[in-house]
Image (cartoon, rainbow, N blue to C red; front, side):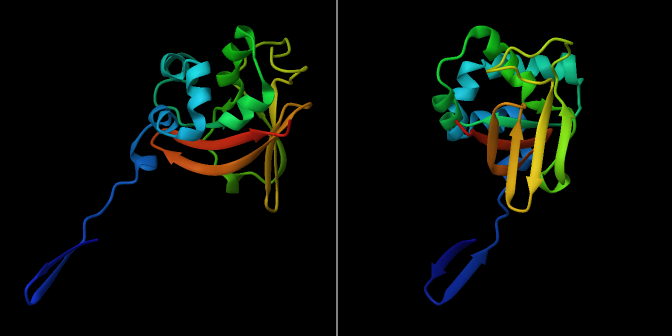
Length: 167
């Protein structure tokens, strides 16, 4: 709300603010979040996410991305290029889901389309293990678990949940 004071009058102007999380897409929302700078840079998200959206997901499909925070990247340490190449696809599920859509433990298919194990730390599974119990919201791969600490960032084409690792 903007307030102007003129001698004996007060004028109140109600100016609606646009929420950037609802009018910008997933890529722009992630790029503008300072907690996701390493994810954006190390995965070359600016180039790779639009390719994934066009070729794997399909144009106009909404999705959910569990974006690893800068703290998660620091905890995990140096990752090889083969791992970095799979991180984006492994952290996306092809459905739009807020934290309230998950109950108990669920196994959601990632965008990795291969019968082989994903080249991530340890021996990751092809499905993301998502667990929501009361106030605890985690994702995992059967070996490592990450805690969702910023859920439900709404973008025009999906939902973003920011994740830290348990390491």
